[in-house]
Length: 130
Image 1: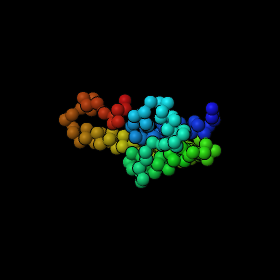
Image 2: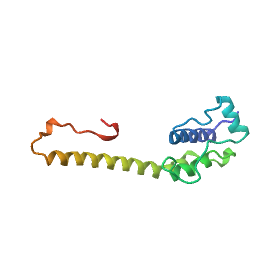
Image 3: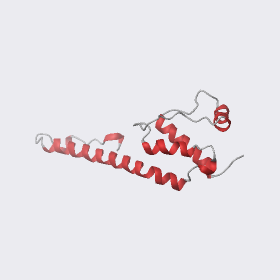
């Protein structure tokens, strides 16, 4: 049985694919058959040829490397962090900016309506935040 960080990286990449595709890889197969497809036939979940909103460039670049047939050629987790960190930070900053912008708009609407009292209208946080 093969063990080690290389296997963890392969599995991590499968989870990243699941998150971005909103699917289970090889869902048409039983788990043992899916594992055999990946191990013996070198099958991998499908990826687009070009970056998309669903599979941005950093993710699309990482997955084939993490699924390399030679476990020693796969990136270690420190390399994965370097590859994904800018994408994750950018996504979080974008979401935070959207939240602040949304709250600012609500405040301006309340401030421009002197008839309505601030206590009467609760602020709503976007993205299901509370």
